Image (cartoon, rainbow, N blue to C red):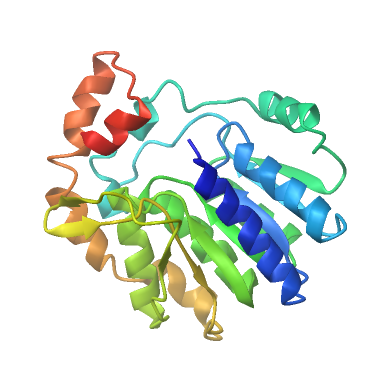
Length: 262
């Protein structure tokens, strides 16, 4: 669920990219009901004369089961959540209801492992890339396929900074290539919470891309060491996600408060 300050963040970064004369498009990977992408479309209509494409990427079937190769996802149980799947048709209706559906909105369906290589072929440049994949794998797969498409001066937003898998994926990705961690929290600091000695004061973050990727980026990216991922495999998930998984299996639907407070 996106809060008002999260939607403002999308608008602010699109406006900033326009002010920098960046001509890249907007892409959201993980859209749920489409609210973030609809707001992005409205911002593009307002500030960029509707000259940017909005890429809407989701499985529209919820999250995938964990794969063994992604260590941090070992105990992930997001795939059990019944309220995550929202059909592409429903998201398209939401766009239409809000006057945001036109030929500059492109929908791509599929788990990111399968869809992102195809998405990559359709993307030229991105000025804003928004990640909302929850898991280590879903976060890393999007960065691996699309980070080199983000313009210098463009922005990457991470919706799931509070979730261990996504958190670990960002650190491992940046450490692998020595990218600067100029991470900025979205909005004012939250009350904050701590797990396993790591303290969060923001649930969502973003950064400005300031360094080009190396020439061998595509060859290296899927061989990056999962240092953070391996650490968090047990430290976080045994006490956090696995416990939640038991609640999911019992049919308990988490509210936004549960997600933060558990």
